[in-house]
Image (cartoon, rainbow over all chains, first blue to last red):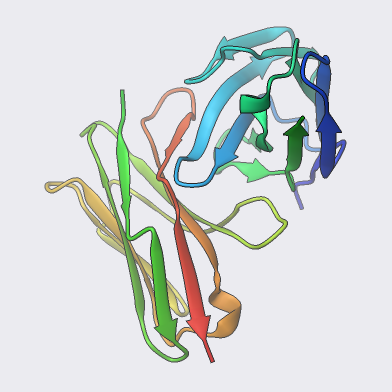
Length: 111
Length: 112
């Protein structure tokens, strides 16, 4: 079974803090994705990566950056957290001939 | 870019009834259409998918139909059970890199 883990299920941070969300997959997949999920808006793609040290902007990259130093790990970084970044963050991996597999999500609250 | 609309946003049915969720897309080059189920506190999980060379696919109580001409596809759940209660997302992929564009989700509530 594909396993995608995210470092925290719940996270509370203050405005202006630097926030790291970690995602790890155990299947050696090249493609990894970060989404945010908000009620009524579905899942929106923030960034994706198709290889180590490679990254591409998704639909809503503003205020975020990513890091992919190792194939199994894809990190989402909020350089200076703001209240409008309060959301559910989902990481996913995508094997070559299959669909995306999601982690359990991190619910981030920025106060 | 691709635009995916999903309806309804909420759906309440009685146990044993059927439920239908519909999605429309804009890019005729899209060729892969998965459906995900998200239970409370979990990430979305694939429940069924269909590719553009197929018109219908069934897996026990769930089925997906695709109308490429009209650019819409639907999820059908028969004999609904309380454990079917969840949020359902449709998605669309257009070849190439495997990016998915998601619908806005449907909250299904099945009452005993």
